[in-house]
Image (cartoon, rainbow, N blue to C red; front, side, top):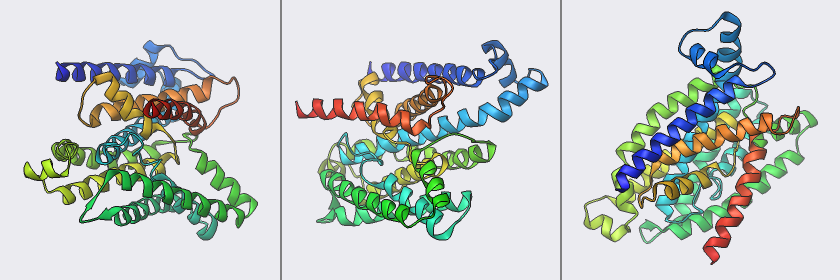
Amino acid sequence: MTATRTIGVAGALTAALLALLVLSVGTGELSIPPGDVIATLMGGGDRSTRFIIETLRLPRALTGILVGASLGAAGAIFQSIARNPLGSPDVVGFVQGASAGAVLEIVVFGGGELAVAAGAVVGGVATAVLVYVLALRGGGVQGYRLVLIGIGIAAMLVAVTDYLLTRSTLEQAQAANVWLTGSLNGRGWEHVRPVAAALAILLPATALLARRLRMLELGDDLARALGVPVESSRLALIFVAVALAAVATASAGPVVFVALAAPQIARRLTRASGPGVACAALTGAALLLGADFASQRAFGPTQLPVGVVTGVGGGLYLIWLLRREWR
């Protein structure tokens, strides 16, 4: 029964995501009917419609889908490993590490867009290594230690980022603040291809590790009894999740709370006990694309960065979650 519901939820999320894609691509200063959007995506349409959709709007929407899917999958892996609803990459410091790496590249080295993205990836991975090493105790990593140490490291990295901003020029500070907000503005095909290539490698790796992830949710002792190499499996899963979060952050900046909310929403929809990485990825993609649509259309002529919308919505969700957990 649970498997059937999961498949049904995945199908509904896919349909909702496709509908959001058509709606997002078809609306703007020049509205395009859904039928024309679908025809253009299928290879038809006139030249002007193809230019608007394929060059101006579709890359932004696809980047949002891929980044949201990366964050949703990463959040599901982290929360499953930590066995804690707060164990997401934007809470335990990995996103803050990527942000600090990017700002360091902007302020100190003055690198271009590719260098900033590389700095974000390096910063996220380095933070993950530090948190993992500090959380090791007695030959293993306990979930609550991972979360608590990650929160402390995150606070320190925010302070590092703030310090770098105080030492920057006006132009550097402006560039860093734009990146730190999290935005899909100006995204083109050059932004779609790297994150798509990364997902083509990381999502199959996640699928291969899915059984081990389910076993780890049962506890280390039971997982060992079932023949699962606990620490090597946990380390591999953390590496994949960090890579997913780092690639997403390098592509769109630190878009907050998607990784926190998407896995939990997916679990409530499927009512499944497992990690549900696939449904979490679909939920994250739908959440981010919907937030980006709202950031462009819900405030009149003013277009907000998508990170502002996810920050407001995620903050309200976090308050609700903490209140529920406290009860």
